[in-house]
Length: 335
Ligand code: TYM
Image (cartoon, rainbow, N blue to C red; front, side, top):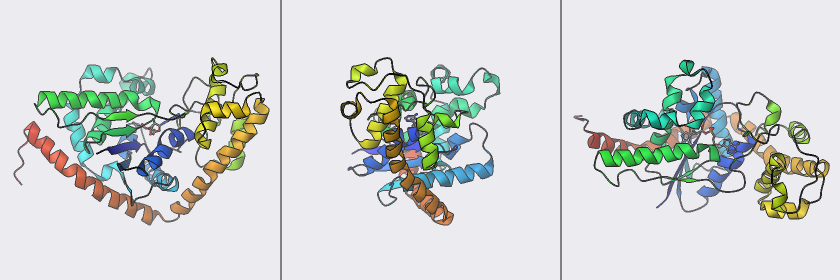
């Protein structure tokens, strides 16, 4: 059977990239025959400084966003990472399995640490080991993520393989597969078609947030960088046109059409005509979500109850797997 695990950091607003590349797909997967486990990864968030009150708010807001996007706690497990201590426990073991050289190759660390490597937290460095623990703690087999997380899932496989090999337990941790599918696995910045849309970009005009109102969305799309040519009718006409390709991909992901079908419909149009259509589609997709989020945030106690119940369900799966791991490693457990 398949077991899906994925996580999102509660840092700032959820972007259209997070929604199309991850959360929307999480919801689609719960409608299939798989066990689905989704996690608000608050322990990952503090690898860079978080104001405690902000973190608490962002954690609940992200849970509300999951629910508003259609995640159903009756069909999926939804919880925040720190409520299931086994994540941190397994991560320690993986700190002792992963090699320095492996972590040195992680591009997300290099990007986030920048030039000032001496000053970032050690947590940022071992972040991928905690992510491996998230996944392997449930013996998850499939991990839906955006393109930027592929390297971390591959590292997870390396950790699983080395653990199984070192301890002589060939099938203990399964090799999880990254699931990177659809037309929005890498949504790009609206200001620069070579950079991914990100909640940490200094320019708010570079991204669409799930909480943006209709005016903000229309303005951001109207001002999105493009080239002067009209849209092509065929895919090869998008060659070398990163910004145009990005808007077509967003339209495709939101409408459920293929990019080919979007071009068949809109090919030949100028951006002055295509952008308003894209803005309307984006507003129609996102405003029900932000309205629902605001409503859910009116009852924080209920969100906390959902996270607590999810944590209980998650711990029920995690606990025996961690106990077995400790036994394999040679820890004495006498109570
Ligand atoms: P995070 O919080 O940065 O992003 C959450 C999810 O959104 C995807 N994503 C995008 N997809 C398409 N286009 C974009 N511009 C874009 N930006 C973000 C990400 O790929 C991700 O799927 N390390 C993870 C969180 C994590 C995790 C895990 C994921 C922790 N433990 C275990 C999977 C399994 C992260 O920082 O995601």
